[in-house]
Image (cartoon, rainbow over all chains, first blue to last red):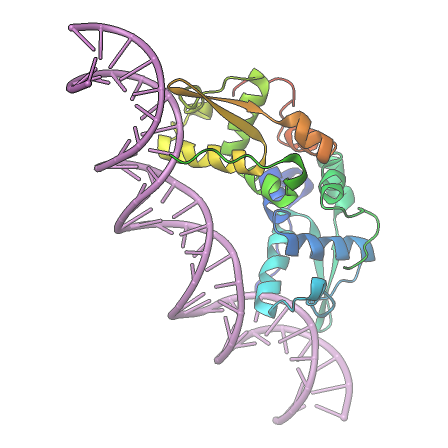
Length: 114
Length: 114
DNA sequence: TCAACAGTTCCGAATTTCTGAACTACGGAA
DNA sequence: TTCCGTAGTTCAGAAATTCGGAACTGTTGA
C-alpha cells in the first residue's frame, strides 16, 4: 500500500473537484463526511442511498475525492478516518463547494445521510 | 440529423453540469459562448487555447454542454448559433455557474478567449 | 503466530471517449 | 433543377476509463 496522496491547497484543480463531484454516489459520500465533520470510515460509507457499494469501488471513490483535495484520509490503526477539506477548498475556490452541495440539495454543514 | 435536445430548466441535473464543466476544453468553449453573449459557431470555437479541436470532438463537446442545459443551439441556415443558458441554470442552481467559472479563473460575464 | 478486519491493488469485462472518414443539411451559383 | 462549398453530425474502430470480484497488505488482538 503506497502512502496516500493529498494535494496542497495551491495545487487544487477545479476540473478534478468538478469531476469528483459529478458522480452522485461520490457526492453522497462527500456530503456524509462533510456532515459528520470527521471520522467517515469506509464501512460507514458503503451503504448510502440504499445501494451497497462494493468495497473496491468505494476505495476508488475515496481515492478520487482524496486526490481532488476534497477529503483527507488518515490511518488510525486498522481503519481509515476521512474528514473533509471544505475550508481549504473554500479558501482557494470561494463558494464552490457550497454552490455544488446546494445544487444537489445538500447543505454543506449537515448531512441527512439519505 | 436528429433534432437538438435541450433539457427543460426543471430537468437540469447537477451531475451533468459538473461533468460537462469538469473538462477544461469544454469550460473554455462555454466561457467563450457565455462571454460572447451569443452566436458561438463551431468554427469560432475550434481553436481555443492553442489546440485545434477536431470537429467531431467539438461536436461531441457541444452535445455534452447542450444536454447538460448549459447552452442552447439554434440552426441559422448553414450554421449553428450557440448561446449560454446561464440565467436559466442560475435560476435553478443559484451561484453554481459563477462559482465554477470563478474557480477556473474566468468571469461569468466576459471572456478573454484565452 | 494466527485470525479477523479495513482497505488497497490487480485484472478482465463493460462502458466511455476520441477522432478521421463518411454523411446530412442548407444556401448559392449556373 | 443540379452541383458545389460550408457547417455540423454520425459512424466506427482504437484508446482510455470505470466497475467490481478476488487476491493482497497492513494492523490489532488473542
